[in-house]
Length: 377
Image (cartoon, rainbow, N blue to C red; front, side, top):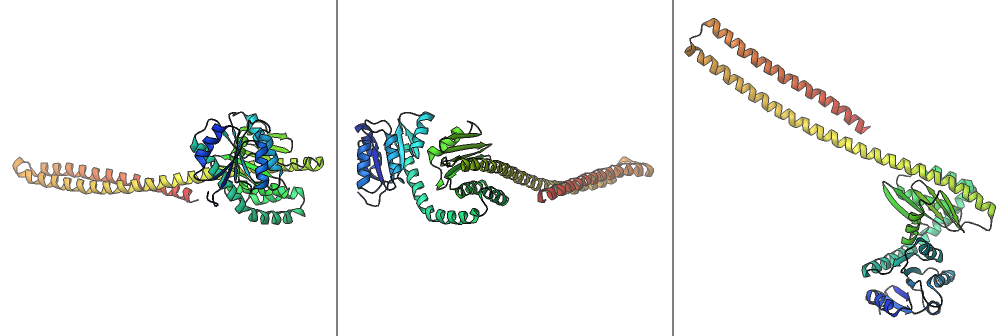
């Protein structure tokens, strides 16, 4: 068993389920098994914490939720990523898993590819979180130093001031969690927009379970409190705060008010970004229209020039043939002159009509130049 493989702990009391999980994970990961919650806690006390724990929910003795809570309460094992395995897909079950500290939920029966994908995602997120820890600590120290003197309201004012420089929803979401960090709050934010979907928390990408909960709770009310957790839904923005300071009711109330103001600012900025994106798309379409119209006019001009040259050749040929036929027709000189004048008049009218078409093209070109000025502006 290669020591550089990521470690997976399976906690399940079903031999069939253990066999299924082992068969699909043993080639790529270092897999160990605990047949009960109690055994899992004993193993983790003696061995290095695994990268991912696949935790069965329904077990005899200690169930998966309680086992997870104990793992998360131990400073030495709290960073292990727990994926619950259950046959239940209700929102209550998933809330229970989230409250216990799980990061994802896989529903029985599931395909091996789904299991492997969730394990890979869990390991990738864990690696990313570790890589961001030093950077996060530095950013936290800097933010706290800058904002402490300004007070709690200063966090909101600083966010609103900085929002004028934000140009995309990823930066907007990042500024939200950094603002919450200034209050020493752990938070997750979901932005659902026509220009993208963002789910992040203080550590980086939000876990799949966290993302699903934010999505499901987005239409459950504007502001909801559940213990130390506070959820705010403003338009297409959902903000989850995980550790409201319930031991200090006054501070808790002030933070709640300030965060509500900040959430309104997030919603307004998101609308502004969406309008800006629509304007950019409209400008691009207008520029494409100008380009296509210019190309079409250039082609029309070439066709008209060829038609003019062809018409002149036809008219010259007609005039020559008519003059050559005068002798055989036995016309008087006056009749010849009249006939010549009639044909020449037709030629002149044809040329005048052609020139009128060119004038229309000039006007179209003027319209296109005006459109180009609008696109450039």
